[in-house]
Image 1 (cartoon, rainbow, N blue to C red):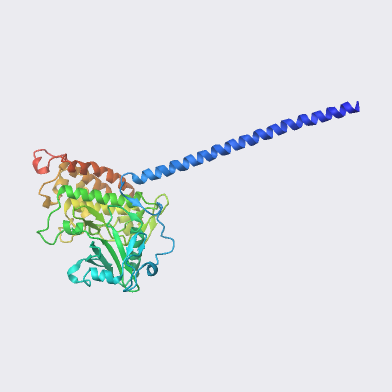
Image 2 (cartoon, helix red, strand yellow):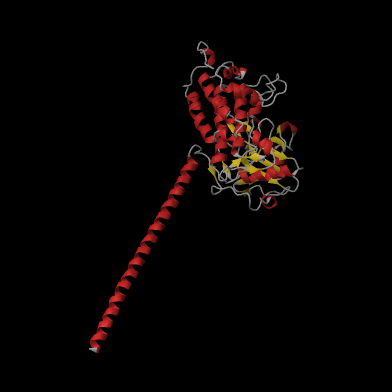
Length: 414
């Protein structure tokens, strides 16, 4: 009897152990299955995000590349110009920094014939620009920065650091630079047709007038440049001094943006707003930036709108020589941009009516949105690009409507 009871207790003990072991094995199998499923989901999600980022960077600006692992970082160690730059009379001509050539001062002195005044092509707030022929036969624009001032030093470092990472056909290419204790020079590709400002507002009446199609192509080129800065870099880059003087024209009269010395890296927060000292050019500054120092990508869009008005009207942003009420281009133009009669009357008279009325109304609507006082009402640069593409495409293929002078018999509606 005792033996029977002992056998019964042993049987019950085994009976309880077996279900617990089975339950534990089942739980382990479930955990392993869920872990594998989670890992697979994470891998698939990461691959999808990588594919989306790659495709996103190729949309709109397919020929632009951003060589900084898709992120600009200026919070690290500044560029050591003494180590990567040149010494006077040194032999670092074959040295490079992030793919940008490092020149000696003597090389650039020789390229410009000793910085001969006959090779001086432009003057800016930060320095003089000389035409130069590099040793390999490349025609270039060599900018010698003024020695004094911390702002010039910052502009030099920023241009080298930024343009050595950004590669876009709508920017003037940085070919190289030179830096020593006294001299700082930047070497750019040469743009034979000068600035957009000089072509729109020439001192010489014999200067060739930019026709309607060329003006709109330049507008699209500049829109693509700002689109790349704002929407294809992380964080976004704000040019902060976008103006017709900082748009250069190549041999085909295509526009490229230059002078990134005042550029600012935007915030990665939702509204992208940063507070900074007000710098830039009067007439192009967005009102909220000029009054508060609050800077966003929408500040660049306002400046773009001013340039678009220059292309449409042939007027400078501020002209005190004009009659009262016409001194400030934006204030004068804004109420006319949405009036179909007035907008025709404000077009640059140098075009002699050679423009499409339909295109004019569309471009005027874009300009009106860009120069809105409230930044939230301004469009994204991607929207501007997508609006301009079909207009420029139609002009390129001769599909645009006839010029206004051939359609005067049609009474425009206000």
